[in-house]
Length: 138
Length: 123
Image (cartoon, rainbow over all chains, first blue to last red):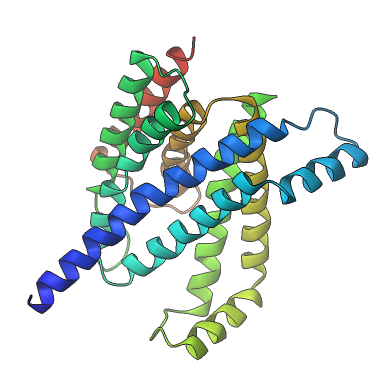
């Protein structure tokens, strides 16, 4: 495999990781937070109780771990690949998060919501293909 | 209350990223990826007040996201946060004086239409 092929393979693998890790992190956080529940009264006792539940939730820790790994993968890929390539491709994450939420958490996703997710992906894709810098030297 | 948390995710999140970006611009570009250089850059970034403001805003956005995820489905919350692109474009135009191209506005419009569909599809 030549050097360019190696870089391409590395880029594709990293994008695959990002598109899986980001949505998986959000889905795991979602599962953890559904178990913990929302803060309803903002007094010190309840906030302390909420934080202690948060710090002992395996789903939340796994979710944070996935999001951290996603962030590292994102930073690394931007060191060799163009942002204008990475950003639109990573728009797929919005579709993946809906798929994971449906199949992993059993969330009911209406056809209209699927359509909305698809249009969002298209929008992010279009934004990604606009100039990265509009001031000063290009 | 949910609308406030959604706004906090988008505004504090975008604001946090802008502050971190400004701090990193002050520190300068990373020359190589050796651990010593990374640590030095990180140390330099932590001495810039914009970095701390950015981290605080990002923490607010994260806890708002947690709160929203306990109230609503992930397949609703995450797509709605795509509205950050609209806040980013508006912030870029009015606060940073960037020229936002028609194509980018078209993308932002598509994102807004998509988010509207996600909202309507909620019920």
